[in-house]
Amino acid sequence: EEVPLPCLLDEHPQGDAKEKQPSEAGGAVEGTPVPSPAARAVEPAAESPQRRSPSREAEEDFYCVKWIRWKGERTPIITQSQNGPCPLLAIINILFLQWKASRAQQGGVKLPPQKEVITAEELMAHLGDCILATQPREPSEGLQLNFQQNINDTMMVLPKLSTGLDVNVRFTGVSDFEYTPECIVFDLLNVPLYHGWLVDPQTPEVVQAVGKLSYNQLVEKIITCKQANDSSLVSEGLVAEQFLESTASQLTYHGLCELTAAVQEGELSVFFRNNHFSTMTKHKGHLYLLVTDQGFLQEERVVWESLHTVDGDSCFCDTDFHLSHTLGKEGATAATPEQRQVDQDYMMALSLQQQQGQDPSALSDLELARQLQQEEYQQQQPQPPPHPQQ
Image (tube, rainbow, N blue to C red; front, side):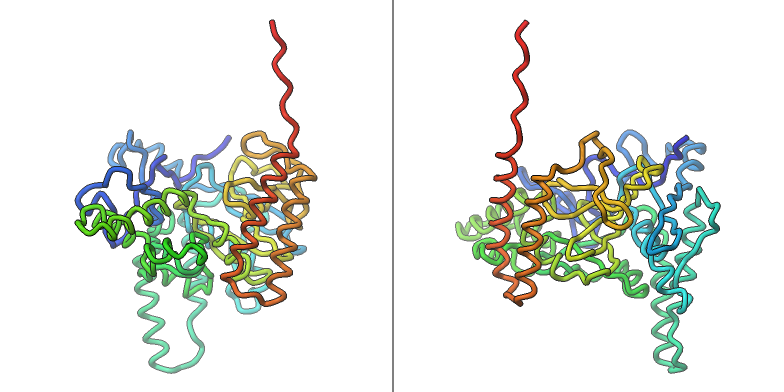
């Protein structure tokens, strides 16, 4: 029997970062997209927090544990039954996956081997232990005071980890976020936080319109420009709005290329996209996201999901990153050999370009090649037979 989990996300999530969202800035402007990256989990509209039943409150406090073989060690990962923000899971799964490497520093986390269900409180306790283990060994009064202040700030943020964090991306780099108190958790645990929502440097009009603004600032700029009398400002606002609409998936090909270049081989990090936090790693130059969907709880060969396209087309892999032929979430089969060849060609080209040390701004040519390869693959697909006439 599946146990419902606490991470519920409305079909149309609304941001709640400190900077105003469109609804806070005088109402949403017609046509202004709101794919807000300010990730605050919200309850379904039909049921407010005050109306949740006690039984549901109790049920939502549990997570199912999936055991995998990771680098020769039986390792737990925490799953969820709903696709929600849950940065808690993304961070805690990194700590589990790091256990073998970090146990000498007593910074890792390990569960009893028979553990099948774990509560949010237990996860928070493990997380707290790991945070306290980061205390500097130097007796310097300044370092200790700074650590104590960081701990105090972290204690204020921890309750948000099981619902959602205020995260506000900047479109200038995969590690660029508006710094908020929530970021202290990632800093203390030395967990990198990435996104892939970048402006292509070879689109100067978009670069000009977006600049170094954060998402929330850009939405406010669009609203202001639409109300301006200056035609150049109106035009710039339309360019910015078109950028948000055309990249509503919150991942661009330029961002994907930059992400692949920035993430270190074997690095465990958190990837933020569409109000969701995922555990991410890089293996042999390819990016993978940890599969935490509870629907795959019993699927030992489904551990990682490739991240190589912006449209969600991906492949499932086992713990050793070998392709899994298990059916996907929607019953889709694994990628065909033709698709895998297209993806391998692209990744090989990306790897060669990185080895040659080419300028990151030149990645746009590679992105164009990727799109052409994707079109070639689609042309190779057999057409479905016509329905027989009655």
